[in-house]
Image (cartoon, one colour):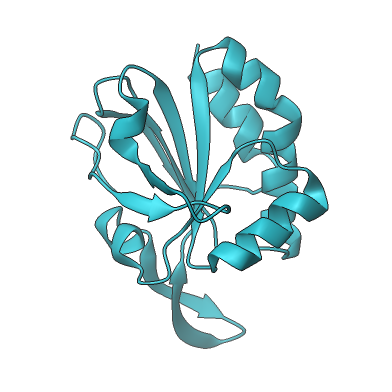
Length: 151
């Protein structure tokens, strides 16, 4: 996990519509940058839908939400459409951003060690600095936790 007080690594990734999105596009705004393992899975769906339900409150507090996984643009589009997600999903199929944000790690899965995304959420301020960082977050609780972190 990256340290609080450090600049957030710059990136440009395609969103669920295939449009390139850069962290610098949100200069001056708070960014909730959350990393999740896989579209359409139970925990990831709970997390995304809870972010979606709270989305108006995040916007009231001047924050945008960006979800990142290694899933494809088309997978993200299906995920967005199935659950009516109102925020941006970014596709990092090359895992460059996952690695830059230190969320691609070894983890235990059914007794086997595998590489994958450790569910992690960062709050980045308007100057591009990490001001809060949470790793191994509980999917369903993370959106409310992040909303509280904005206060």
